[in-house]
Amino acid sequence: MFSLGAWMRRRRARRLPLSEPEFLATAARLPGMAQLPAARLAQWQQLTREFLSDKHIHGAGGLEPDAAMRQCIAQLATWPILDLGYAALDGWHDVIVYPGAFRARRERHDEDIEHLVHEYEEELAGESMDHGPLVLSWDDILTDLEHPEEMKSLVVHEIAHKLDGLSGAVNGAPPMRKSMSQQAWTEAFSAAFEAMNQQLDAEQETVLDPYAASAPEEFFAVMSEYHFIAPDLLAEVYPQVAAQLRQFYGPSP
Image (cartoon, rainbow, N blue to C red; front, side, top):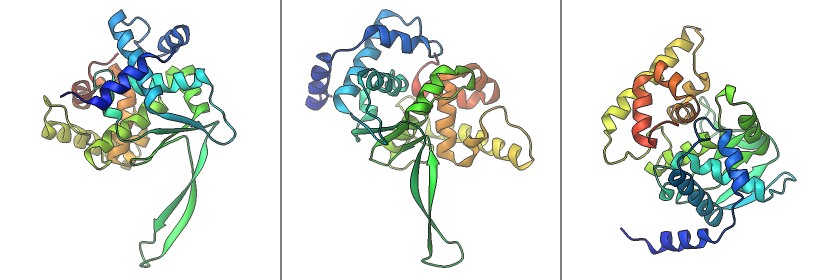
């Protein structure tokens, strides 16, 4: 279906300058992305331009993002949507970038005393607010790029939360593509999530990041990181989850 807004966004984006040497240098630091076919590379560059045209990237905590930082963030944010298309990032417009980890205010309702709310602060590297901004730590973005052996990507993780929220709730079940089965997704992810939690309950070490076991939405986001950064390891540990993510995101790099 033709969308005038999407057409105008793509048209505006084509005019934006992009540093190809910096783009290729960032791609070379991502697993499997250094030798992309020319058509695939052009597609990714166009998505990056659309992100830069559509999203407002603001600094916070004394950081002023320059053009290279903005391009890097846009390139990483569009890595997961190469097969999904830019419409997957609709519904929000702002990215806030801190120089490092930042503190966010939280509220917790008391389980024993009705109407009693406890306030506290939590240190974060990233946050994806429902219909709100994407908040990122620049130091953590650089660490992920410099240490691929850690198999982490803050930007992929937070973009996964944005995709998850397209269903109306961030719960580890993003809207399925037409060829996918919601039942197959639920069975694969529920079984793997339960298996990891059973390992932790038994005080066993997990092969993959145990943070994934904290909630279904975090499991999806963490598994998304492995899909892009360590797909062979993911397929070895949770083959059914890996298969579902290949259907959702497209082939692993």
